[in-house]
Amino acid sequence: MTDAKKLREALLLERKNGYDVISVELSQQMEAYCQGYMDYLDKGRTERLCVRETVALAEAEGFTPYEPNQSLKAGDKIYHVNRDKSVFLAVIGSRPLSEGVVIGASHIDSPRLDLKPYPLVENSDFCLLKTHYYGGIRKYQWASIPLMLSGVVIKADGSRVEVEIGREPGDPVLTIPDLLPHLAARQSQKPLHSGIEGEQLNLLAGSHPYPGEGKDRIKLMVMALLNEKYGIVESDLLSAELSAVPIHPVREVGLDRSMIGGYGQDDRVCAYATLKALFDAAGERTMVCVLADKEEVGSVGTTGVKGRTFDWFMRKLCDSQNTHLQDCFAKSFCLSTDVTAGYDPNFADVYEKNNSAMLNQGIGLCKYTGSRGKSAGSDANAETVAWVRQKLEAAGVLWQMAELGKVDEGGGGTVAQFMAHRDIDTLDAGTPVLAMHAPFEVTSKLDCFMTYLAMKAVFEG
Ligand code: MN
Ligand code: MN
Image 1 (cartoon, rainbow, N blue to C red):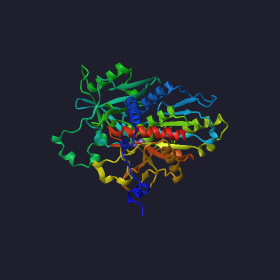
Image 2 (cartoon, protein in one colour):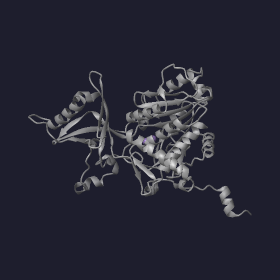
Image 3 (cartoon, helix red, strand yellow):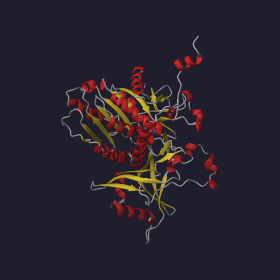
């Protein structure tokens, strides 16, 4: 009989904390990487801001805007911005597109509060801005925190104004005051999802009346200030996209500074990892980075992954090499990089610990997402999982398999199914996150870095 200890090592799987495995050199690289990520996260608080930051980083790396029908050669670095809200980047490989491409697909939209078309109301000597939430928020989390306002207004004459209020230190901010506990006896009895209702998500925007006579002088003062700063009138808000997002700074979390806290890590943590991997990878196949919009509402519209702009971009690349798009897709691989739920001992009863992503154990690979019987998930085949596993093992990347939570406890989806619909072998993978969709989400530095290393290994695979 073999010694049980030896046999256990040979046969059984042991899950390890990444800090017990990672080298000193790698942990130094991790710190530098995470500083860059925190800066990106801090600046890119909406998909539009994130596109802007992405383009700035890409141009510094030598990427240029794709000109339709431009000739392309190996080593060319191009990007295409779709309606200011999503962006595709590619590094043309030395191997032909007929051999397929390697895609990293993340999303850069995050849950938030969008202003309604008629946002301004005056009530009881306050000016309020009415909102309609975007994505899956837990409404009570958005009360009593400082929020900034960001977006665009297209005026009646078609001119465009960029609005940003609350970003700079010293700027005023907006907030939704919650009820004081002294009067919250009835509110506290309500189910959590209705403690703050959708129609209570009204931003406090002013209380100072415009001097003089007449009604709505507080609303008038707010509009006068908007007019002074941006040259807009109330009717211009009818054709606007203004979002309220948390403004608290991105911070290191924990006395050991091992974690990162900030708004919008779903999914900018993977977006940054995919982008940086694209910059740094030395792949032979063409590498494509997709930073999509609208994932949080089903990948719909012109800027979501279901839209045709991605196919147009890829068809243009294929045309330059006389390759049929579907021939290229059939040989391509996509890592759909989107966050997964990190195991949280505070809420242990919703997780199945064996199959949960643990913080500091590396990027989580999700064979499937979805809910109930894997519905609306992209269930990657074993061959695809194995291919990625080999790449990660060969590159020394720390990884784990992950399910979102207990069977029938809930669920979620990603862009994976829409890439798979194109006949692209696709696997879900992402950084484990605590408090996903909250105004302050938490990740571990080690997992953030491993997400980057994983994407780089796949690009080079
Ligand atoms: Mn996501
Ligand atoms: Mn999400």
